[in-house]
Image (cartoon, rainbow, N blue to C red; front, side, top):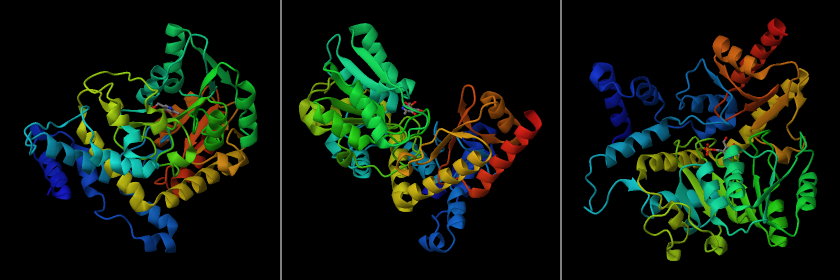
Length: 430
Ligand SMILES: Cc1ncc(COP(=O)(O)O)c(C=O)c1O
């Protein structure tokens, strides 16, 4: 058995002791200082903010930093970092019990990682492939489905480049057609999205591709209804769920999509470079592989053939598994409730300050991302000022959009620090 805390502390000690061993230094030390136990459920019931404040201690983001950009990338907390370090400790000794085993993910089933993931996202193990991120998974989708020149892929105008461009590549090289619907900002309700998509479907539409939660405004699109619409017309549905695992509860079978991609390094705070591709069992045989090594065409191994990607990093999967355990230990219900509460609070405060909301007024179409437009504010200047003078990180879009992410570990007082800083900026700069 690896003594996790002991392992970490020995690194922290070694790092402090000698420059030659100083790999990891401050990060190891901070992760080692995190409380060994998660806070008690009783604390949540008696004092919710205190409960989240305790959980905040699991994160290595310094206490004086406010991180409102979890939507771009999450920060792996101590339990995840420990698991990654333990993964290295276990694997790099080259002492696997079977001499045919190597610590390389990319050639086998790795069910010890797929099983907890499949349970967490509501699908079967054989429908999920461990890949490295949503961009990679989206590329499998765009390259993998049979499409003829002139066949259409319908998407929204709020797709991330890592979702849109795999299809643009295919369009440029093989003549498929990418069509986009423009989503209103904000999206008023689910019906408006369904109508827009329905009206844009033509007899040539073969794939409906959309983000479950968009990168542009954080709107939660009505994925279940959109997938049902696609299915009713014989169109494949492919959903980019980069933001969803860890932000909201997810059940892929209930959602009813044909394909789903994700980057759990965002809201699940998993390892960077641990992603997944889901392909519904009924559709797997219709999807070609993109990366080919032994097993690329072996239909018996179902979605596993998409994770035959060549030598990859097993400790990344240790981190992914630990991030799932952490989310389950806290409880996705609690996490999602917290996400909604904090984003709603922040959005309300920004609107009071005159910001234009680009966040849906329909509560079912928003979660942990509040997006506002503040005409007159130059977002890059604000981003730099906040970081350089206040140690606050936000993310925006030109010219004046602010996308504010509220992960569960963000404290109310940290949101208030941002609001006070925003007021100060407007006072001194505009
Ligand atoms: C909706 C969406 N899809 C895909 C991506 C790309 O994620 P990754 O860089 O992890 O592949 C992002 C990243 O922000 C995103 O928001």
